[in-house]
Length: 165
Length: 85
Ligand SMILES: [Zn+2]
Image 1 (cartoon, each protein chain N blue to C red):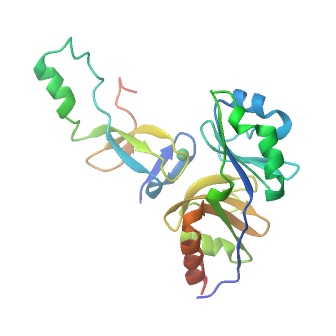
Image 2 (cartoon, each protein chain N blue to C red; image 1 turned 90 degrees about the vertical axis):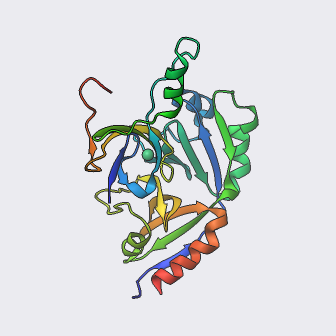
């Protein structure tokens, strides 16, 4: 069975992992980040910086790689207060984009979550499973994108090729 | 397939979770209980025929640890029995 999709393995992006009480995190981040998403497993965006609310007191922020140094300078991970944690994780995750008319079908092979628009909207983002691996899944233009731990990326690329061959 | 309700994420497939075992008794003060009671606390795991409170970890999800009540006769997730939480 072949599917009408395009699979893109994305290059590195600037990623920072943030943990702590929401007030403490937003106080430290100031206007370096979009406003904290209110609903669990949702995201906000401002000036090409995205913020994913992916666990209790836990966020990931993402931006184009060119902004990594500027974000690090703003977020100052090594100087942050002891009650919060900020870690640069840019090289720990690999993102894939599955776009095209059959993107949903391909994702339904890989992922147990219902990713239909009505359930998993444009601002949804969540950790779940992709091919049995922990993966960060969200919607993108014309499809779905997800990230797995960087060391699994070659294997996941193989899975996607086999699933769509 | 079983759906488990994570307090952060809502209902998710069981495959995203790891079972953390039954919730044990509250740790007694070892100096205030008999040897027998202390050994019972250390070694006896709740194993009822019926509702049991269990720890689950949303490992391939948000990372939350939480507890649910599961009926060992039906494998269904059930309400907490009266008088418990
Ligand atoms: Zn969860």
